[in-house]
Length: 70
Image (cartoon, rainbow, N blue to C red; front, side, top):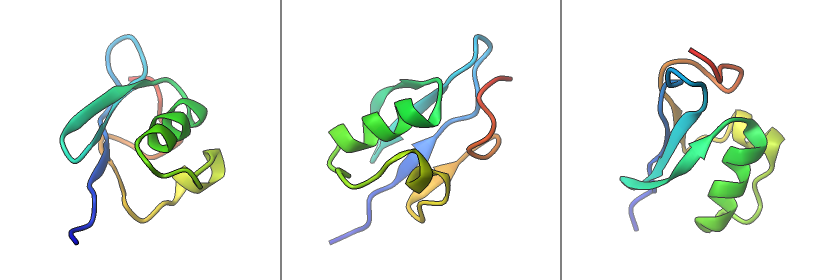
């Protein structure tokens, strides 16, 4: 089975980052908490705010987990 691609897009003009899993749009996250909730709903029930900071399957585009505004 292929690994999932979890992508956190660069911050937008109004803040927040779009989140996609395997190309499916999950929502716009404004914090690590938001991101962890989206990923839990997508099937990664065991992730929390600390886990998403260095989760090996998450691709951070346009800045890492500390960047939420442009």
